[in-house]
Every structure is written in structure tokens, then in C-alpha cells.
Image (cartoon, rainbow, N blue to C red; front, side, top):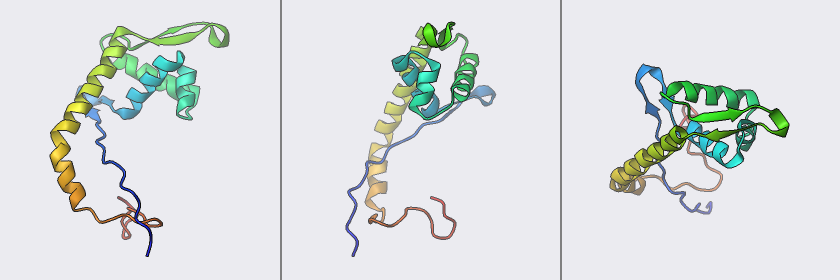
Length: 135
């Protein structure tokens, strides 16, 4: 018999599908948070193992998504450049996290009921469907 794995907490991941086909989800918000900590697009990208180009493209898309930029960049490259969150960027993070917290609270009892009917997960087993290989 395999030992039982301690349950990982169930979490909710929110992706907002906004008008015009625009999307805001945990990855973009985490990138903005990392940019706020790191002070650069390159540093934020490195946090997630992402190239500077990929991080820059995401930041550019985020800047175009909102009425005002969420990130401001300073030229200068390695020796003096950088990036900072704007007040709009800080507000976007705060609002997204508020939506996430409210969804988590609203779903708490239903998630507990769902967890109560889950099969136990054992070491060496996968949660993937044996028929399709998907969850």
C-alpha cells in the first residue's frame, strides 16, 4: 500500500476575459508583481524563466490593455534602465487580487464539499485521467 500524500490546499485560479478579447490572469499579474519587486522587465522575466523579449511583449500588451500604462520604462539598459509600476499598474494588481479573494471566499463551502468527495491521492499516482492523460 502506498503512503497517503498530505492534501495540498485547493486553490482558485481566476482568468478575467475582458471585452475585446483581452485577458488578465494570474501569470500577467504575477509578472507585474515581479516587475515591482525587481525594478526591470528583464528581472521580472528571469523570475519565471522567461526571455526578456517574452516579458517585454507581455508588458507591452498590458500597457495597451488599459487606458493608462501599467508600467513605465526608463532607457539605459544594463547600467541605468529599469521599469516601475505606475499607479494604474498598482491598481490593476490590487483589483485583480480583490476579485480573487472574493471568489475564494464565495466558493469556500462548495470547494470544501468538492474536496470531501475527491479520491485520495497516493505517492506514485497521477491525477491525470488514464483514458486521456488529462485532468
